Amino acid sequence: MPPPCPSVLKTPPLTSHHPLSVAPMMDRTDRHCRYFLRQISRRTLLYTEMVTSMAILHGDKHKLLGFDRSEHPLALQIGGDNPADLAKCARIAADFGYDEVNLNVGCPSSRVQNGNFGACLMLQPDRVAECIAAMVAATTLPVTIKHRIGVDEVDSYEDLVKFVSIVSQTGCQRFSVHARKAWLQGLSPKENREVPPLRYEDVHRLKQDLPHLSIEINGGFTNLEQVQTQLQHVDAVMIGRAIYDNPYLLALVDRDIYGDPTPPPSRHQIVTQMLPYIDTWTSKGLKLHSITRHMLQLFHGRSGSRIWKRLITEQSVLPGAGVSVVERALAEIPDGESC
Image (tube, rainbow, N blue to C red; front, top):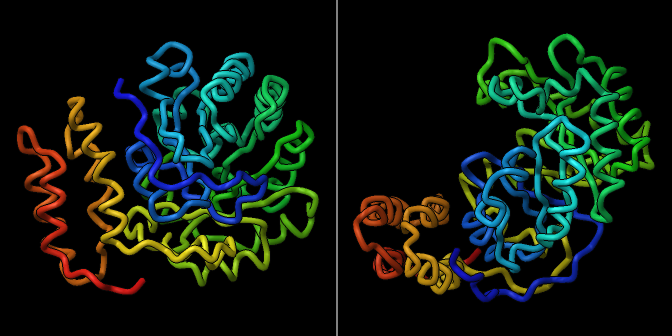
């Protein structure tokens, strides 16, 4: 495994409250994506992809769980339904230096259902409580949960309150609530992110009725104005694919959400900050595409975006492709833009 790269940005002090996070996304939020996003925002809470408890216990832990220290604050999301196994995973997360550990109770994919974890666990709140309790007992890290507002026909507001109330008795620190129900049959994971209607009012009401809990809302947000509006009703907001499709949305988060006066980096500065990291990993044999695929949308909506994506896409897969590919592509983009 390549040695950790030196951090480009100084890691900010960790806080227990994170008003904005980037959602865990399969095939998206790997360590290279997270390092890239960290060059844009120093303070946003980042998540790993979901990693199953079985993979953590029996797989290559350093490959699955390794990260650069600049990625803090960072949460590990785990999928599983066995309390003893999840407790072991929570201890491993602490040993690796994660800041939080999160249980996935929101993914509706058939593969996840076959393992009896993800969204289907919302139908077993007592089982979820056992899992969370075991994790809480195993580590001093904050233990959080990401879930839906409901599953199939078990989707009333009362069902949601019952689930959260049962799980909260375990000492769970935060509830990240995707404001859509999940259909376990008949919809693909992608459709489950789009077809069930958003019910923000249920999440707002949850915070009103259970004010002692930290409630984070997720689902359909695409800009910081929406985030600011939601923060009037809940404690935090989670954004997923909108960040991946336009990562520079994060540029003003530290100032506008966290009150950090540090000027945001320009897109050119972000790419330049990535170059040492790219050079370190590609010199160890990693394919350039593994890193640059996460950077394709950095110039979204700006002059030169099309040529940036074309050059990076075509040349990053060539044998021996390295940092010079990114430098040549960047040279094609007009500089001097404002945020």
